[in-house]
Every structure is written in structure tokens, then in C-alpha cells.
Image 1 (tube, helix red, strand yellow):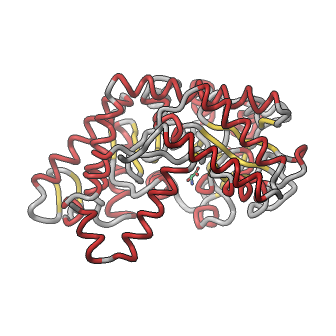
Image 2: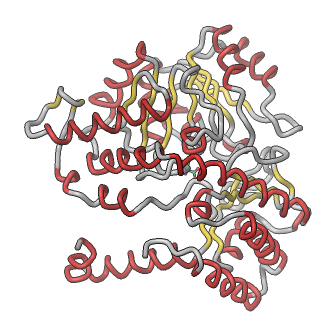
Length: 412
Ligand code: DSN
């Protein structure tokens, strides 16, 4: 119904979206932070819930007419609690960055210290990168991974003891190894810091029981809802009851205005999906697929940063392949494989043309692809990188990619 109206009224937007749909349908989406939501999630997103203003929280709104919106927001909070075992949940953050910023404002005074991981070692911009406003307001001390590719917990402890941060922040965007939540909690307790985990990338793996859950241990856990969790684009904060008031006040009225209730409705639908037994299978398969890719790429002499993957993503350092991350991303685009260029630890190159690429399996796994497809795809990635200047070969790979995608239809 929505589509027909759009087509009639605004053909320019309609056609652009149709082309995007076609791109998604015929390509291999390997950006590890992307996924494909279900038609039910799309329907909730495109629903009349978008029409409603509802500043405040369920039962305590500044607008009339919020009774049904309250039902939706209460549902999603309950489902999130069930999924993660959270004491308190705020589902209003518009995305991951606003969620993290709301936590900083809830807990910190200007100049306070936070320990966060360096971007090139797998951290996120909002974990204190100097280009962000947060880094101008608060004192971020950055840590990284060691020569073995792992978080050095002893070093992290020493840094924490030296700087006495108010928050120790873990949870990353490009780090592919397991995080020892309890070890971080012990270090934080020793220095009197609040523990904060940003599980945006691995939330679906945690919800699906494929990775350990920090929520019962940590004070505060932020996430996006659109990555492995396979919901709509949005954010969420989970915390211990003692932080609930400060977090809620920080999100609204401290930082945001009216919540996007269509988005919140779509989060509710996605969480219902994540509570189904099939989601556990999905989470498990994401890991199996990432491992298969790793094995195949290692056979072809690709350098996997951090040694290996324990989650859904792989960060490849392409230095030994004599191609930059930008060149590899562009070549793979031409071959119908979407990845993103990415800095690698101690990268001598720049963020716009770094040494690596980041790839992941959540979206392909949603399409139903398994180990056999991963083996095939690893071969295509290698061929595209070797032949990155050969337009004909890249076009040939793209045709093979299109044939494969026809066996795994998306929104039909
Ligand atoms: N942009 C997200 C990612 O790709 O990991 C993080 O915010």
C-alpha cells in the first residue's frame, strides 16, 4: 500500500529506493554493522506511530493521546529486559552515538576521565576520538591492543590505576575477539569506576546466546538495535536500577526531544523475533560463517587483525597484498561485494585511505547463506583483490555474485 502511494506521488524517491532495493537484493552485503530487517519490522517502521509526539516515558508524558504509544514502549522495554536480563532499559536513544553521549552526560562532569579504546584498534568514534565534541568536554584516555592483537588487561589495569577514570568503556566496532567482561569489572571495582559496555556490534550474538552477556555484570550497557540484533536503526541503554533515573533524565529532557515511536514500535517487533528459538540458530550461524571466511582467507595469506575472529567480523590488514583499503573497497564494490575500508592497529595510512577492510557475516546469514557460500565468497574476495585493476574480471565476479544472490531472495 505504502509503496503504491509513493510510486504515484514521488517517482524520484520511489525510483531511488527501488534501485537501493535492487542493490541490496543483487549484492553481497558484508559491512559487519549492516543487516536486513524483516517485513514486519519494516511495517512497524512505516506505521502511523511516526505521527505521534510523546516526550516523557510511559505513564509520564507531556502530551495527550499517548495511551497506545505507552503500550508499545512498555512492550519493547519488557522484551529487552527478557532478552538481556536488564534491570532498567531506555529505548529512546535515536542511535548508538546519542546513547553513548547520554550516558556520558548522565555520569560525568566536564573534565572527568573515561578510559576508551582507540579507533584504529577497534574502538568507536564516540569512545573518545579527538574529532568528537565529547573528547573536547571530557578527558578520554585511549587504550589499544598489544602486539599479539589482544586487549592487554594488565596494561589496561595499570592505565586505570594511573588515571582513575570515572568510566571504563569496552565494546568495540572492529575488534573481533572475546571481551572478558568479568576482568574489566574487577579492574573497575579496584579503581572505583563505572563499567560501561557498548555492545552495538555484538548485541544480536549476545541476545542469541552465542556470546557472553555483560548486562548482568556491568553498570551500563549501550547498543544499537540495527546491527546483529536485526532491528530498526536506533539505540538503547540498559543499566542497573541505581543509574535508571540519571540515564532517563539524560536521554530526555537532557539530550533528546520527542522519541521516534515508529522506530520504537519496530524495536519491539525485532525483539520479539530475537526471542524466538530461530534467532539462536541465526546467531550461531553468524559465528560459523565468520570462522569459515577466516579459514578460507587465511589459506590465501590474508592477515587477520587481532589474530582471528570470535564474533561476526574480520578486520583484514591488506599491507601484504599491496592494495589499500580504499582500493580494495572500490574493487569489491565493482564485484558486487560491499565492505568498508577500515584503519588497522598502528595504521600508518589515513582514515580515508587506510590499510584495511572490515567484513562481516550478519547480513549474509540473514539471507540464509552458510559455509559453502562463505567458501565461494572468500574466493571471490581474493580474486577481486588480486585483479583490482581488471574491470572485466570484476564484472565477471559480479555476474557470479548476482547468480548466487538469486538463490537467497530478500524482500519478495
Ligand atoms: N557505523 C557503525 C559501524 O559501522 O560499525 C558504528 O557506529
